[in-house]
Length: 267
Ligand code: ADP
Figure 1 (cartoon, rainbow, N blue to C red):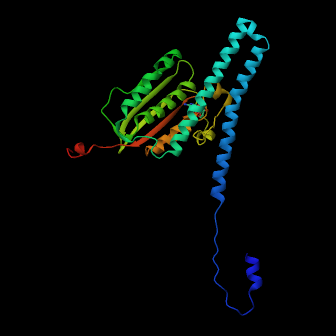
Figure 2 (figure 1 turned 30 degrees about the horizontal axis):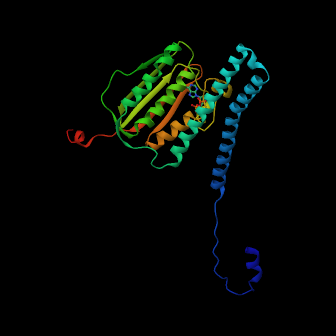
Figure 3 (figure 1 turned 60 degrees about the vertical axis):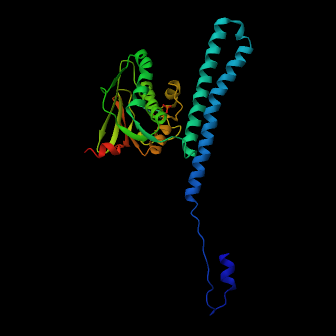
């Protein structure tokens, strides 16, 4: 140790060579803290629906099962909480896949309009049920990006899910995409409740929600935007958001546009 070295050195003797190794543990500690917070959040998120399911089954066993009306109510609750657990586990697995597997996705040149349109089509029934109009581009030319079809579909699905969840009945959601300055730019904007500026930076964190009760009631897991952000990075893209409280939010995605070699040569 440093103390022993000083004590053994006699006055006038040359100083022996010393190698000092300093490890900066701040970053390691920070990562360890994020990891343990995540595990504790996961535990909490899994415990909540599970406890609700147990409460329902106990009530049924205590006699509620004898009354068909009560029995139906508690069974419906069990199904709802079970669905939540299922969604949470799917989202956690998706996040783990993107974070840990280097080849989690098959990257190839795809026409981004195809998975976007599929994601939009999937949401028409829910939008119709909430009397929300889904407005999209007229059909446009093929726009190529290096990505994975299902990955892009997951990104757009999550953003439209959120737009639908946080937009009141009668609202409007616009989805547009175009080429701009070497990128493919996708915009998803809604006329919903909006997000206060102080929350904007944090909504991409795992389990961060502006209003936990409301988000849970809407069926959210708090992982949607974390997944979206990771996927964007995976495909060398970026995501940004602007929003105004009670006016609506706009999420903008950018992916490098791929020009096919034979097209380049025709310019
Ligand atoms: P959740 O599953 O709770 O929706 P997300 O990660 O998808 O989780 O979003 C995080 C939080 O960001 C949400 O709980 C909500 O508070 C806010 N948010 C996301 N999208 C929107 C939106 N389009 N309009 C208003 N708030 C939004």
